Image (cartoon, rainbow, N blue to C red; front, top):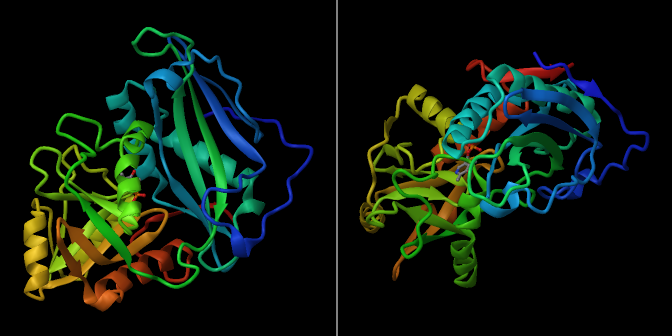
Amino acid sequence: MLNIKYELTKEKKAKPDENNLGFGIYYTDHMFIIEHTEGIGWHDARIVPYQPLTLDPAAMVFHYAMESFEGLKAYRLPDNSIQLFRPEKNAERMINTNKRMCLPSLSVEDFVQAVKAIVETDKDWVPHNDGTSLYIRPFVIATEPHLGVRTSKHHKFIIICSPVGAYYSTGINPVKIFVEDEYTRACPGGTGFTKCGGNYAASLVSQVKAHDLGYEQTLWLDGVEHKYVEEVGSMNCFFKIDGVVYTAPCVGTVLPGVTRMSCIELIKKWGYEVSEERLPITKVMEASKEGKLEEVFGTGTAAVISPVGELRYEDEVAYINDGKIGELTQKLYDTLTGIQWGKIPDDMGWTTKVCD
Ligand SMILES: *Cc1c(COP(=O)(O)O)cnc(C)c1O
């Protein structure tokens, strides 16, 4: 159990217009901080007014990307209570990330306690409109001033929160995806399975390239042969081919998404075959030509489910389901969002109440 001290703001900010929240633009009144010092462990848990950090310019996070993060959401239910979706899965994943990155971790219990505490403090910021939510961003940074490369003796774990709009405010439009065959996101033995800023810094070059070619996101192939499909931008990716649902195995180069895990559980429950065998991009393109590529979708906390309407690989383009959302994609979207916003009963036991 963390002993959290509260220093509440004297000047609450004006709330933004719930119809125009966007993603990651507005921040709530408070933030959670706890310090980690080598030899002492975690100390000084507190909730303070949202404010800039003061760090030494030699702080190790600035030089060697010694950072990790998580992403989850709080949802407002029809009865105005607030809940989280599988927050202990984010806590467990952050522990796995931090082991790889030599960063300290909170226990699962302390992580969930901290998330609940900041959401409850800023509960008025959990928006009400359909499809809106409070995005929660926990992160760890190495703050010791030191230019030699080694692990840091001092870290901060911080949680900030941002009210975010309905991802599909203009309806669910399938995205156009560019299959990246030049750059690599992750390699065996690397950091692909971690949520660390460095992975994203190294991926932007492909995002820019995809945008320049008129595509919205990049589909990454494996880093060794550039042959097997792995992930789409910040989402896991699923392919329904001839009745079977494929998604890349989480064996070190793929981020183990909470949404991915939840989709696999639902798809199996509904009686489909799910394959986590490696899937060659050539098999996807062939299936498309034979009319067997039934559905493609990305999964992640921000969008929940994002249907893919078009895939470009080298000089070939696969058009999926006439640019419309597929039947399974729609069912997953309705079920997951139904459970998250409390519109259908949570018979999977996935949600945790923050406050009534
Ligand atoms: C966060 C993330 C995902 C999605 O994970 P969720 O837990 O479902 O939000 C997928 N891929 C990458 C690279 C990510 O960083």
